[in-house]
Every structure is written in C-alpha cells, then in structure tokens.
Amino acid sequence: MTELGNRLKEAREAKGLSLEDLQELTKIQKRYLIGIEEGNYSMMPGKFYVRAFIKQYCEAVGLDSEEIFEQYKSEIPSVYSEELPEQLSRVQSRKTIPAGDSKVVELLPKILAAVLVIGAAVLIWVLVLNYMSNPDNDKKDAKQSDAVDYNKSEEFNKEEKNADQKQNEEKSDSSEKKNEDDTAVKDDKKEQNLAVTSSSGKNSTYELKNTDTFKLKVTSKGSPWVGIKNGEGKLLFQGTIEKDKSQEIDFTNEKEAVINIGRAYETEIYVNDEKLEYSISPTEVNTQLVTIQFTKAE
Image (cartoon, rainbow, N blue to C red):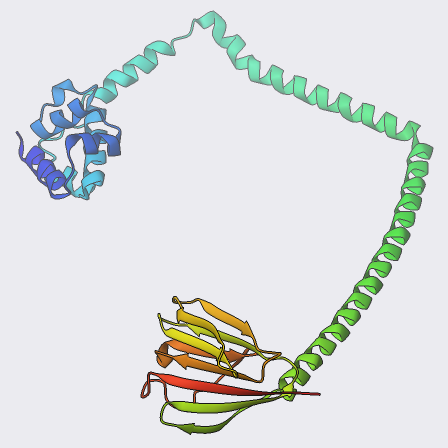
C-alpha cells in the first residue's frame, strides 16, 4: 500500500465510511476504490480516470484534492505525458479526408447559408403580399374587437358595481347585527350580580340577583369529590369529577344551591358562565361549603 493509499484510507475510516458507503457516495466501483488505496493503478481504465477517481475520493472524505495532487505527485500518474500524444494521433487519423471530398466540405456551409437567405426572402415576400391584399379585413376585425371589448367592459363594470353594493350592504347588516349582539351580551353581563354575603371557616355564602336564570357548572382541574344539593337538602349530584370534566345543573327553578367540595383548589365554579371567585382561599382551606342564594329577577 502506498503513502497516498494510507492517507486516503485513514481519512475514510476517520469519517466512519466503509468502501460500500464510499462507492454509494462517489458512484465509483468498489474495486477501483480498493485499487486507489493499494496503489494499483494498472487496473484503472486509464490515467485520466486515476486522477479523476482520486479527486472524487478526496472530496468524499474531506481532503483538499489539489493539496493531495501536489504532495503525492510522484505517486500519481500524469495525464499529458503519455495519453495526449496518443489521443492527438487518433484525432489526426480520424480527420484524414480524401483530397477529392475536401472541396465539397468547404462549399457546404456557403450553400446552406445561401438556401437560408433565399428562404427568408420568400417568406417575407409572401407575408407582405397577404398584408397588402387584406387591409379592410384588418380594420373590420379591429372595429369588431373594439366593440366587443367595450360591451364586455360595460357589463363587467355593472357586475362589479352591483357586487360592491351588495357586499357593502352585507357588511352593514353584519355590523349592525354584531353591535346588537354585543349590546345584548353586555346588558346580560351587566344585569347579573353575584356577590359574597358572608364567609367563615370553610363556609361561604353568595347572593345571585338581577337574572332570571341560574345555571351551575362545576369543573374539575384534578379529581375532586363534589356533592351538590338544593335549598331543601335534596342531593342532586355526589361523586368524583374526573380531570377536565364538568357537572352542570340548572337551578333556575330553585332558590338555593349548596356545593360541598373536597378539594377546592382543584375545582372551579361557574354561575351562568361567570366564574365564582372563592372568598376563602382554596389553597388554605381545601374543603369548603359554598351556598348560592338565588333571587330571580321579575
């Protein structure tokens, strides 16, 4: 194995590449890659391919090919010393033309050029004749085209104007409807009044007024135990609410709701979609009894 072969092989192994990997990267047959590493250049198709294969090998393993060629120029065969004369001799032998045919070859480009010039002149002459013989048809076609374009333009402008007008009307209606909906939502929120009236120990009492509905929703953020009764002590729900689940009960026809909570810090209470703020810190008092007294608006 030559010094160059050792250098290339070490660079390949440092990259973690096998000969099969390098063959896939460079598209050079594996037997030629082995020949490069062993310095066996006689198996190559020619000296030109030796240099080309070494350059591709260097680029694949991250080496500077110019530096490698300079450093190991004594090991790498030169292309021009032997192959160039042989190639020139082949070219000369192939290009030897009988004396009788050389004149025809010299005249051939001139003949082709003359044919092209004559053909172009004939084509121009035919086009001029056609144009001069039908001037009225061109004007007529132009007038008809202008008329059609004008009519299309008028129709397009009318359609565009109607579409813009319709779009503006739809926007206006949508804007008015949205304003009405926003006003209704604001009025509903403004009317409802949910406020704490007392709190002591684990007990807290709230009063719900200025609304004709009372919809209760208890949402779980963990796995709290919850019991829900009405003002008469009737049990409406009791059990553990799974995480991210909710229990909803309509208390519109009731006067009071009593919620017994096992883990208040994992539980959220909503009254008509309004979140109830604990008057007693749920992190300090885990178990709480929340009472909501409902006075229906007339």
